[in-house]
Length: 143
Image (cartoon, rainbow, N blue to C red; front, top):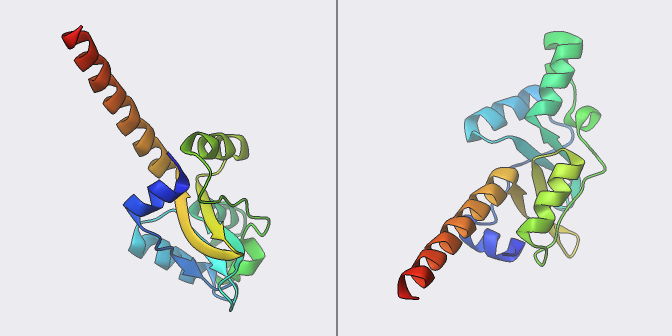
């Protein structure tokens, strides 16, 4: 299963935030949308970074409530690992596991084109295993 197929199922909508917004803005957006990460984009829709709930918790734990006044650009991960539509779910799982992160923006022609979470990949793998199990049961029953 490829990223393209995953996006066809889940859609390409991505929650974004600007680099000059505050961590308070980011926390509010994450909470309202019940998501774990925001892609930080520049004015041209290009990926400038990614900010996760973990990033916010880490900074608040270090600096206290004043951390929420900081700009997203000061806390975001600017060296963002992205994926393309042609990559497989297995490749994504390996990238996420090795990188110890849970969200991969999808990039096409230098533009943000979706996002894949570890939950998306796990859900897909479970569906694949269930389908394979049913196929094996059917094969055994007809043998």
